[in-house]
Image (cartoon, rainbow, N blue to C red; front, side, top):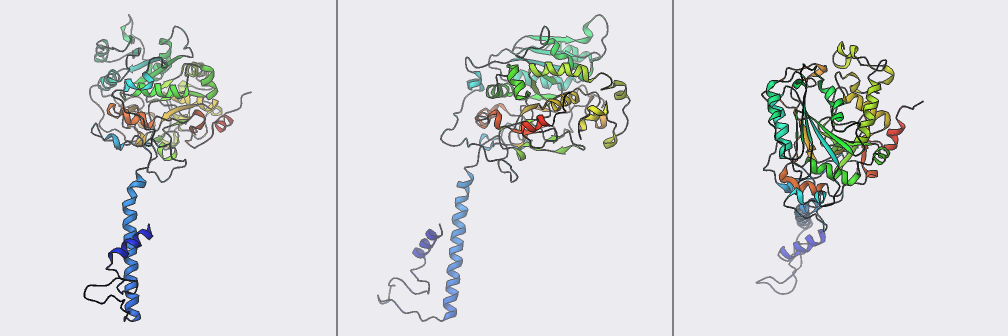
Amino acid sequence: RSEGAARELGEGDAGLDLNGAPLYPQRGTRSSRLPCRCDDRSMQSRQQSLAIVLLLLLSLSLFFLGPEDQSAAPSALSSDADEGEGEQEGSLLLAGEGSSTLHTPPPHSIDGEERIESVDSVCDLPEFAVGAPRPKIAIFVFAWRRLASLRRLVDSLLAAEYCGHTMPLTIMVDGGALAAVREYVRGVEWRHGPLRLVVADDGPAPVASLGIRGMWINCSSLASAGELRDDEHILPLEDDIEVSPLFYWWLLRAARSYGPIGDGTLMRRRRLVGISLYTPRLNEIHYPQVKWLPEVHERAPAFLLQVPCSWGALFFGSHWRDFLKFYALRVRPPFFDFAQEAAQRGVGKHREPLGDPHVRLPASRSNVWPRSWKRFLIDFMYGRGLTMLYPNLRLQRSFSTTFMERGGHSAKDGREEAIQATSLRRDTDPLKTVPLVLASQTNAVQRAMAELPSFARLGVFDLQHERRSAERLVQACPRRP
């Protein structure tokens, strides 16, 4: 490029040589070359000027070549968290694009010759083709006293794309629910499959509240006549969650790549418990919680994490059935004491850990969580070296999000906040409330997820959110007698 710049300079500098003498005859002069009569200082000045011009032209050439280099950057979903429907599809980039702290090579470019063709509808994608696998998924919505957020969740489920697939929905209304909540759920019209309402207070006698932990633990008993089978999977959703219109497509896409998810033997061998709809921005295991952005650590559009997601995730029947058996033993004395939980002392880092010290996890904030079902699933996954699959799009754009509406788990140090029944929280936390994938981004997201890594090549992160091999997770498991 510098040689080309030099040639360009020679053609446009009035035909002077390096000493300033004309290279070609000038008008009004003789055709013979004129000898240079300049002194050394004048010649040095001209040489410096020529060098400056050369450098300037070289800089200009690099400037105009820059965009060509940048255009080869990989594509993926990208958007600021507060952008809306007006976002341009061309701005959607894969996780990690533009980061200077990546630890893995860039993913296969999706802008080359094998570019994925655009579709008019998500229903035109291979996941909805005739003969494509259809996992058995049952959705469970947990409701109590937050009417406004419940409406938002149900509206998002109604607006999602199922493309003719049958999707059973069960709405569980806990004991002591607001009358307005009970009235609302009786009026829900679910057009995507069978609807079942389980309203605790509809019986002849008042029913004690199960609490959010009780609803999680008991919901799967409603999905099957007995225990869940390997090919029966559950999607529990608390009422302060909202799902993307493409959430079901993502579950099918992941199941197509890493399934069949109904094969319990395969899922146990891979130690995969489920598929998250949500991408985290926090390491909730560390105390205090610290910001953790997957796109900084992993470039691929999906990864494995040893922490389960409670803000929108599909749990496989094989592992969930095993977890319930584990839970039944884990909450018995001497391993756990509900009386100690009710009288828990301390705040912040001095908060009292719960349960038998011999079964607590190393350096895990979950040891102090009260009224939590998730702490026991974390124990279960750590003890068996299990992971969950997470999507990894730019800026954590996800297939579900949480608004952390006020309730049993929304305040610090396990305190409960007064529930706002008819209004929505305005002071959302941007480290928890992530942006949703929009319906208008169907083509961008299907291109971003076009080439998911093989299961063996997925990035793996342990309980502390450190990159590890799957073998290391198993080696870290407590040894069984």
